[in-house]
Amino acid sequence: MPGSSTKTAPQAGLSPDLKGALLMTLSMAGFAVEDMFIKLASRQMPVGQVMAIMGFTGALVFALMSLRAREQAVPRAFLLPGLMVRSAFEIGGRLFYALAIALTPLSTTSAILQATPLVVIAGAAVLFHEPVGWRRWAAVLVGFAGVMLILQPGAGGFSALSLLAVAGMLGFAGRDLATRAAPRVLSNRQLGTIGFAMLGVAGLIVLAFTGGLVWPAPQGWAFLAGCTGFGIVGYHALTGAMRTGSVAAVTPFRYTRLIFALILAVLVVGERPGPEVLAGSALVVLAGVYGLTRSRRADAMAGRG
Image (cartoon, rainbow, N blue to C red):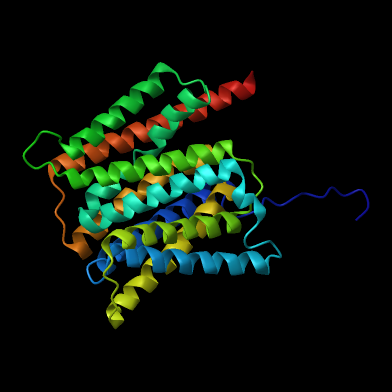
């Protein structure tokens, strides 16, 4: 009617940050299930074979998705120096992390991986001169203390194989730092292509030293399908989370991966994490969440200035 005021009805639904948090949680659940299937598949065939099949299959899926979106499946940007450095760290991270999953307890490997954001915070301060206050440095030190509690160097139960998880974690941290330095010229689908391709390359490197290819049994093929499928789902949910909510709001939900991993390690793999693993995991998670929260506050203060 003329002269009547039009009221806008409030939109129902979840906020972008809440949607992003749910997607991040879904992503971490997918990656935890992926790790479980890698663990199970590596009991039936060489871990290098698992990595190669999973990596190149996932790369093919993302390449087809890129073509469907009318993007280049293998763009020249893959050869840019910054992206080549990222790929090198990706190979190292995936190689050592997959070996750690196959050769060490899943709960221990997953717990050590949670220190990645703390290493990124320290690396950003050293390499990119980002401001990091004493509180975040303290969080980094507490997180590293948690990792040492999990590893227990010098103790009777220490296994040198657990250092594989540390090497994998450092590789992923290097990849994340290199991603920040590299030009943003690739879509998430193209990054998925190169990321899974690097997993395939890492698998071939392992096979070059170990050999022993086998034809999987039907159960082995099911495990391979599981790790590949859940890996793709996890990556998709991760990119959706980072595009839906603010980075500061959704990133702390990365630590839900450890919860899912511990549940699967106990119920499916049959592990019994010791008190030192649980205590160290708690330190790493608390330090990481605190460090990310402080980063969010620092960004907010910078925005006001």
